[in-house]
Image (cartoon, rainbow, N blue to C red; front, top):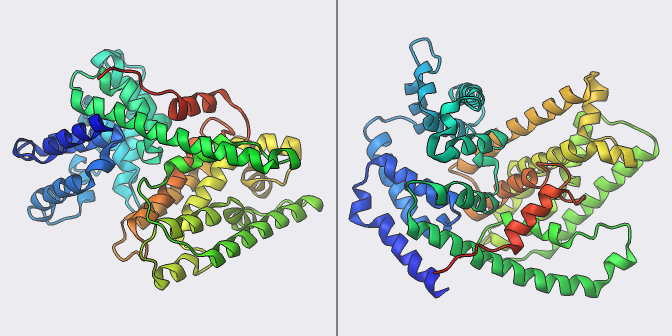
Length: 430
């Protein structure tokens, strides 16, 4: 802890001192990007905000008088297509691809940027030149991004991957940042281990796994869902509203049981309306709201539940429900369960499973656009910590179900992820 404090002070000086502020804008942005990818940006939020505000005022707001998203138009040719010359800059192409996932509905330039960059990056996977760049680091980053963009990834697991696979192998590694990233990861991991220790003791005392053998005995997997939450929450409490959400959740489970008992396949719309609540996200985020919000205002509470649920709850609900279905529906149908979104769409449209799965993925993609809008609206009734919790829950859903049922079944990929995140520290000497 002492060494960690020393390193944080060094990095703060590095971020704000005159020599950094005199860096070129691209260098400042790359430094901030590295802080985020290394999982240590939360220590320097004020300093990062200061730099970003300054850059925005100097280079976009004052000089150009236009929205930052408009900058992407400069990469187009006279016919409105992205310039073919961009193919020569793989790193820039990768950054364009990652940035495109911050789009909101109607931002056609970023939609085109995603399609354009994704197609070129896939072709580059077979290009020998990319294999030679810094020992193949760029190739690794391209594969990682095409598998899942950074905007859809949970930060801490991604930080471990970036530290081990990219940053410490880079020619431009900053030893102070690297040491702090590893040390901070180990400190946070130690905290997780202490929490798990207490949870395990409590779980054993309840004997629920013995008295309810049909329930999933998945303490560590359940705990893993919390990793994506805010780091320094403020505390609040509202017992009656939690009770209300548990009732809603039970009613959706009952509805699924009724559908199953009469062998009814709901329409996709019926399934999603019920599934948004059966995903458990409204219960989870109701608790999160009262945990991380301080002070709590009546207006925010009303906004949370008006029109059944606010979009900030609906979006991660949709992402979790559909990500879960893509990973688990085949196995659950074999075991005997109500049709999921994939089967509902197949029954409704006559599409085969592959087409239905692609359609469900497109809904997830569109939902992220709405989520992105909710992240940046200026008149949101919700505090930043809660909005961040909602976004992270959507990311956590895709993390848990990326390679199959990471929650309900012991798949190898999830076992490795849990070990890396919770139990295996970075080994190094100070």
